[in-house]
Length: 344
Ligand code: SF4
Image (cartoon, rainbow, N blue to C red; front, side, top):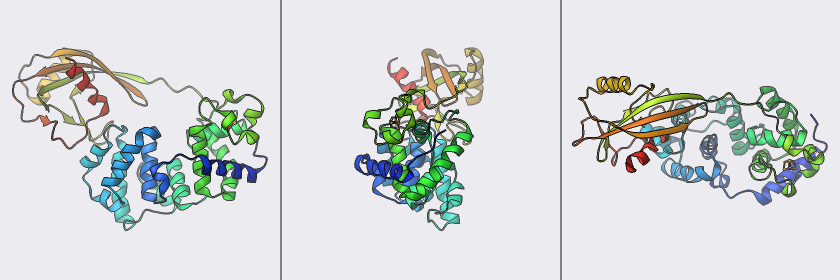
């Protein structure tokens, strides 16, 4: 791995480029750590363009830690609906209560205290510390890793923890020469706008610093090991409904899609087995279900393949949820099922 030849110029070039080219994002208008925190958590698994309306709605409804801490989790989940990875919403809500209880409602300012919040890992803690408090903490996400692996000709697998350590060691002295808030966002922005998977090197302010560019070898970086294949889970999913009323369950809080509404489903290929279990679980009489087809949903580590069966009944059951007045969110994996019902 190479090193940065002229650290001062490196910091100057990327910072200046950022000041002149940064996107006009709502959370860039503030250094409020609460706002930066929410935006960073939302950005963990969501594209920037998609998260902006969610961020704006969220901040409007929960403008500070105190309001969020006092809110009901069902309302938090409801504003999160569609963003996916709902564990993030639970973590934000729990963390707001921790901040209220342990920090008198003031967002923590040390790296250690920020990292102690739920759902905040090394990257997010360092990003909040650098962006909101202008402290020299190095935040390395996938974008930054891609940029730096090209600039430095980093030949190891960037998924390894040693890669993060190696790049952190290079960036630590650099961030001390910079305005940490600007430098941190500049690296992220360069990865998002210019040094993308297919980089736009001709528009890049860092050509003179980039060894992969100088060697005309940018597409050979970053080096990435193959991910383990996703596991496939097959379900029989039941949609029992009357007009806007649906038989739904609330998924267990600690599991996948925890706390969200979902259609009852059973992990099996066997309709009869699933149907008997479904009837017993909900103490139902016999209903005539018809197959609506197959729906897939891809998570980070697994794929659900759902064989969906539906039955419309003539009057609602007491246990059914009125979809027009519900306050809880339904999982995106199951929201898709409505398209099958509509096309029935
Ligand atoms: S010159 Fe190309 S490869 Fe190097 S940092 Fe810029 S965009 Fe990335």
